[in-house]
Image (cartoon, rainbow, N blue to C red; front, side):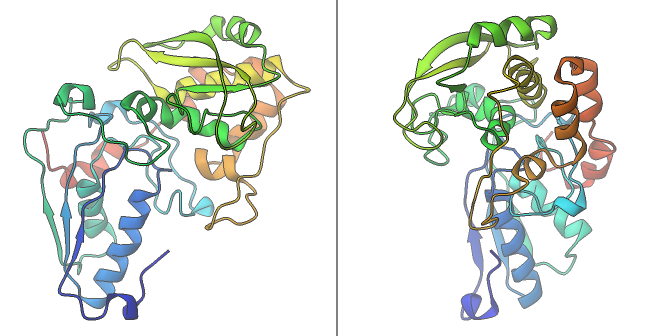
Length: 303
């Protein structure tokens, strides 16, 4: 995952120009992290063409948990929140301050972007950052719905609503929504849908599902919503629901994927033991970001 001296030999500089979605477990940030580490070690200039964070950059909207260092992986190599509210240029600036002061880093900021601007407000067309991000609505829900990739539910990969939906052939969407009604998350509404995923669990099978439709982007908290929805699914389907392995190049066994995604070991056990007790207050405690705003203030490039 980290470039070698041989791979970088003969270069005058590395130019990094990759879009991001502002989420810790989206791997592009860690591609940058390991590239920056190598460039710092070998004295190679790194130039970043910065891009907006499509979820916006308001630090009060950041959502944890912070990453337990024992769960470091290629979907989280530094102790940052799930929704971090920084651009990749700002993350690199933070890493220069905290990790590699010798790095020859130059960030070229994007123009016209402000911290309170989410992607739809830029007026720019959405260009998929990867095949699984077909629309901004997918990126908006992704910080919470990606948690379901550690379960035996589908997130609609391969469809036009990837990460906007969760479901399975056995899901009783009405019962899940009834359970969720006691803790209705803000800024989002839910619809019962049917979808057929192209890849992942239940590929080619008709799934009953729940679609998240963001009604107020400023109020919506995707990680909190994802956890409340997950608790409702577990409570409704104690015999059907299961955690699942998620093998990748960085984690071939696929074990412990939920812990790597959420960034802590304690939440899964609480969900297993007593999902009915998981409420908005509980989730708010889980998602605290500690001193994150104070920690990053010297790395901010936009107001």
